[in-house]
Length: 373
Image (cartoon, rainbow, N blue to C red; front, side, top):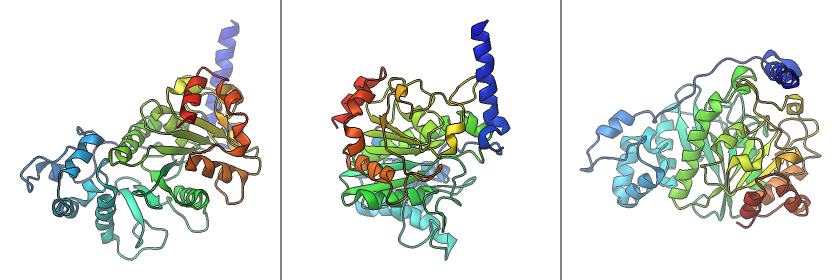
């Protein structure tokens, strides 16, 4: 009977996520964008080089990287010109070629505001105009970087909200730009809005449906970076993006997973993530996400709060972060800590407690192993 009562309480709390309790608002149901990039049919039929081209669905990122490594520069450029939408989104293709292909794909947009992905001089690593649009942009020099970071955003992010004037730290581009500036030379940061995010914080945000599709895309994206000879990334996951990262964790190559303002990672603790990466978490005292029930029941909710010491993540200081999007604001302890992680070191405030925190869960051994990287 007591167990039944606990289940009813959990269900009521999870339902509050959908009905608007604690400041959550209703959102429209979204259809996850999956499958190969636009133009794939033409790509598959192309025999210009006298051979089959790597299939965007069946070929691994390593297969794609190997294919392009065997091509001369002339043939690479030919493919980028003939199939810009495929090459620009093909994980494992050389990043320089992807920049060129996406510039071609975006060129039809004409003159654009400085915040648009089509603006001159931006390093666009992925661009898919279907649906609400998906974008990935690089800050810094990926090819020469000793460390690479990827920022994964939460709800309400798409090609139109990827970078907004006057809202610097509430967008993936703004977060990545601030992190790159704070981390300094030798680090490159990718703002990755490569999945269909929830709109508002309703049923989509309370379930893992969109996160599951996003986790597949994020994993392949990270695999594409390493297949191209780049360092394994540190992945910074904000809000619903931390649900994506939690589901991607067992397969995604990463040195670190950093979750900020997380509603949960669909894992009981660090050990349940089954990752060799160091796992970090932060939640500001003024972050409204703190009012969201840390439960998972009947498919609703995302489980325990990763910033709870019992979860086993390493703490990121966030005392001076304000609200749900204040973690990347210049001058804050949180951004200084995030920059240290991006550089591959431990924040000073967390260094002394890392061992204790890591041992707080069954995943402590994994966290300790990741710390040696």
